[in-house]
Amino acid sequence: MASRFLASAALVAIATFGYFSILGLGEKNGFFGALDDALAKSNDVDAAGIPLRRAYTGLLAPLDSFLNTLVAFFTPCVSRELPALTLFSAFAAVQVLPLHTAVVLEGLRSANAGTVFALAAVWGTIYQTVPFGIVLPIYCALYVWRSPLAYLSPSTPPASRAEMLSMDPLHVRAVTGALTLGYVVPTLLAALPAMFPGKIATEVQEVFLAVWQFFPAQVAAWQFILLAVVKKLGLVKESVQWHRATPEARLLYSGRVYRYILGITAALHLALLNFVVVPWMLSTSSESESAIDATGDLQAAFVPMSVLAPRRITSLAEGTLTLLQYDVYCAAGSVILLTSYLSYVAWGSVRAGGVALAKSIQRTLVVGPGGAVLWALWDRDDAALSAAAEVKKRS
Image (cartoon, rainbow, N blue to C red; front, side, top):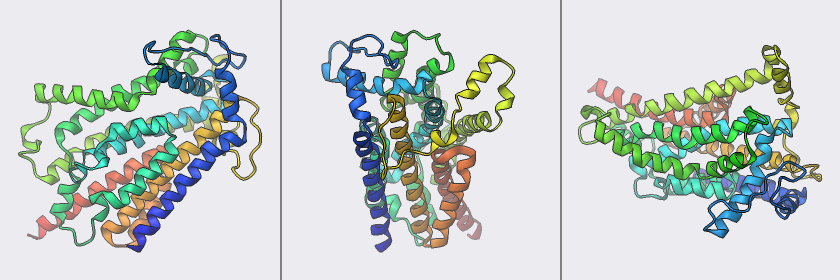
């Protein structure tokens, strides 16, 4: 019980730090004031290059106002005006994929059915409205107390463990396509202005950025659509469907999601790392040289402004960068802490939690912090499968 209090206290501390480092710092360094000033200007592109469309739906004024603010916030991410922001935006976009995948998969777990964790689309919508770095630590703190999976222990029978972690293969089969169509495609469309500067009309850029804001709802909608397709076309073998398959078979089937998402994450993360570490590979054209310049100052890209000694931002892009840095770090850090805690309680060993944490830190080099989170969840599934296989072997 003491460890549960300590874990939840640490997660609440991260959420509190997220509040002060994201929202509090945004007030102190002048970012929110600069954003308000930008939004108060005309409908034309302002001096900083921020498009200021006033209507997206034309029907819901509050939604249009909210989208107008978000588009103004995210436009510097794809405008290439601040090289460090361009680099970190690409890094963050890659990491959000496995992090959101983790939330979606936890919502599909048998043990989480009927809990707040089954509402992945709701959580996603919340952290698209309230900063990611505040909402995910709160999600994790609730998970420690409210998810049945946080109460697994060494005495939990392996068969029960596998049953609690298992997911419906029909839903699992639909998830990969849903994440591709609901997140990957909208993200690529939103990034087009950065990939092809000067080629995308401002009006189109605004629409792509506005559409991206709804990716959690889009993922959920595609899950619903693709689930019907999977059932209709019989894309999941009868032998692994819920009413026929053992919990171990269902859990094993979920590995397809991990392989797919971590494959994408690793490829993009390593490509980005390669782009930064080995810039000479892209030095064959003038366009590549300008792309290399976009890597900017690595320290500026990945080391945020101090919360204790803030300074006034010099541009809206700088404020956006600072907010995103703390947003991603607090979000990923909280879920890494949660996965380490879950390993500790599930196997009753501080060493198990420490090993999980060490692995996650090491894996950030290959798949980033978000990818490390998803990989840790895959480890949890594999450990449950191994324990069940060992029992069957003995019997």
